[in-house]
Length: 200
Image (cartoon, rainbow, N blue to C red; front, side, top):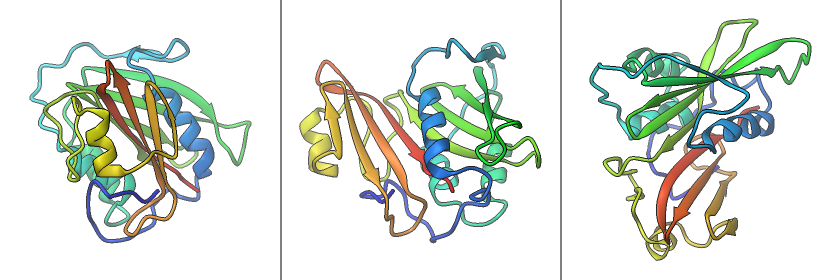
């Protein structure tokens, strides 16, 4: 999806684009990033981490929405510190329903990255980034804590909205994969931001 891009980089196709249809992976990833607590049908793994959590939101968004080359997403995933928790769900492969792939959400302090793993090849690629911490600011200025009027000033009118959730569908991005930005509100202010990539 194309938006007032929260990050800039060269245009490219995602390496695993042929492994999972965009719409399906979007729906699966949203199912995980849409909740603030562990998913009831998933498995919570790992204990609170003690390693420093120096994660760049801009780099996470670039790896998810506009990886710079075949190994860019993998390099980003390899650079991540140990997560505080992992929520995992087994999902049917869209091209072979009899085969199970994995969606895994890595939870860090104030940010989470959802990763799709293709069982047949072992390939992993990030499909969503969710921010709940105020210390993170997207390149376009979006951050947790903004008022709805400030979000509208940056992004314009949402594609769909409810009192607690605004959706922005960016289907023709200038420099990356289509994606959906979900802006969650609580008490009239942003409580979470989630960028979810569409995949072929």
